[in-house]
Image (tube, rainbow, N blue to C red; front, side):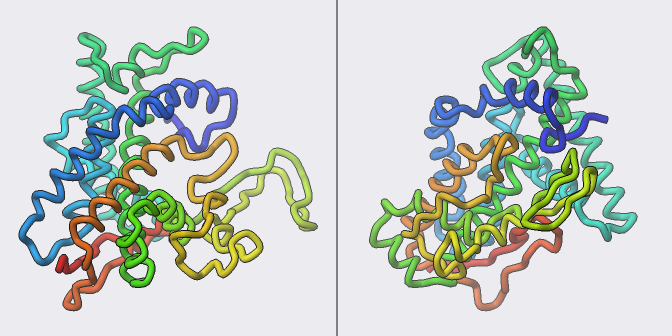
Length: 321
């Protein structure tokens, strides 16, 4: 068993994060801009002429899944399978999952692991310019990643790299539709899109909580905290703190929302934040430009994912005209 990166402490956390950060630095992410723009256009082109779409199934789900698969060097022919496996693996966070859900979760891990192992073996024989090849040849202080670590990291990247970005786009579009004044504001000034995405992350963040385990007894705001206990911190509550964000429950795409904690903070801040921002900004920009009158489908309400910690939509039916 290899713990996920988010559960590792130093020195293991630092070792693996340094290896991974080389693929997620600003230059590497900027190099992906053209490809992400192309994927975005292709997905929207496929919806051309339709007066109804499901934003999640037709666009917000496939976009980040394909982007992270291409970044890793995985074939995209099974993009929909990877998206389905990701959602099934996410159910590991459901404390009330039944035996059927547990079986799907196990099968998703097995099937995804097989796909990753096949590509890891292929890259060891014939490396390419992709993330899995970099992992295979990665060496930091003479400490190579094992195959198990590579497969574990790939699983984390594909799940975290698509689910939360899907939720960012879905939650953000829903916030625009439910706040027509802000939608009109963005239509009138597309230059606000980068700022709008930060406000979307603050207003309805995809990850609502995180946890920390103190290593020694301490006091937190006057409350005694014992070493080894689990503390749950609400990122969503922090993002609606009136001392930081005036009128926090108001969606305002022009506010300065850069202090939000949607990506966490400190040494565990989200590794893929630059990629999520790029995908979110491009997605919202293109959606508003193509469908300036986007609205909810009155015949089919949105559906939220019923899962702790992960706030997103499994279905967002929209009218495009």
